[in-house]
Each structure stands twice: as C-alpha cells, then as structure tokens.
Image (cartoon, one colour):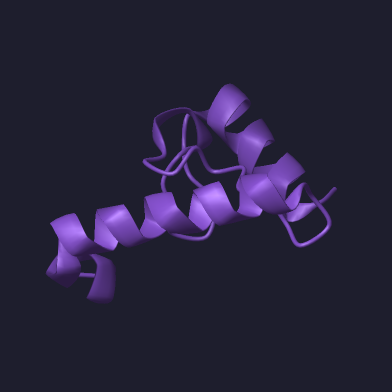
Length: 66
C-alpha cells in the first residue's frame, strides 16, 4: 500500500493519523497535493497557497512539531 493509501486507510478505519501528520480528513493543505507530473497550473497554485499559509503563520510553518 502506498503512503497515501495507508494514511487514508488509517483515517477511515482507525480514526488516526499516519507518521505524525494531520489526518487526511482534517488536513489544512488537503493532504493530496499535486506532484511534478500533474498540471503545472495546479502545482503553481498549490505553491502559492503554501506561501500564503507560511506568510500568515510563519512560526507554525517553521516549527511544525511543536
């Protein structure tokens, strides 16, 4: 099973997260972000959204484990 498949399975069946990440159903970034093989506009849009989240809360983006 892939990492995304395992994370989805754990969220649905066990109600927990995988590898200290957010649960798939409540992830801030949607959990399934575009890869380099996807549409370049989707990748660019995802990158812009990431920059917006970092600008809004730089410390929570830098120190995610705290």
